[in-house]
Image (cartoon, rainbow, N blue to C red; front, side, top):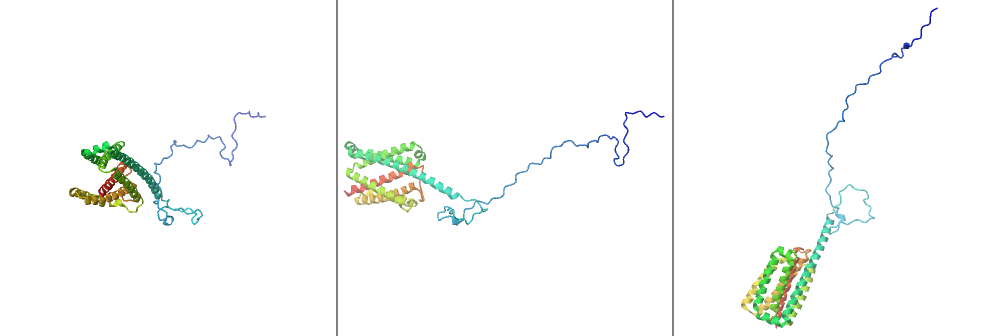
Length: 321
């Protein structure tokens, strides 16, 4: 009797099966070969796409503007076009022009106030000096006996007028402009005082009152008039030089009637000058205007016009007596 086969630790392979052909132990599958890690592909930087072309801003149609050119907003209950339209943005140039006009008007009003305040101070100083020459007997007698004083003040006045008119740095820089204007006002007052001593106090007061009335009336006329006297400045200048030539003729002929005609024409010419200078200061719709920086020059022009009218009226009153 055969001995049974000894048990072996060896494991026998499984029987062959056609359905699963690979049943024998196989090595583990090897992984597929992998490439080295590569960075992500980079592209060159591209510029941003250009913006779409935009149309230029156009103003609203003429139906929404009145005759003055100011845009008019339709009422809220107007619903003819509620949907948003693909149109150009509104045109705001007119609004900015209104703001600029408003600021310019404010600056012009401040300039006018400064000019007339300076003019009032000049006239008060001048009237005070004239009153001193008229009512102070010692000074009155001294001025009558010293003609060189009148000629000296005349030369000083002419020099200061040239400096203030031709030197822009002098009349624009503070306080240099006020110093020179004060010196001119004092010398002009002394000159007028030395002239008025040859007239009676009553005649001088009548001339002062008439000059004040004429100047006030002409200033109101210049503010309200639609006539632009600034456009005729060249013609007025020619008439002024004609008047100067006629004055030289009167000084040679020494006729009382010629003096009366000369004083009458001088009053008329410098009245026109006062209207023109007032319109130059006011600006607005006039053809020419003075810069707001030239308040000293503007006050000087008005002062000279008023003083010249005063001298012409005083001469007329003196010749009529």
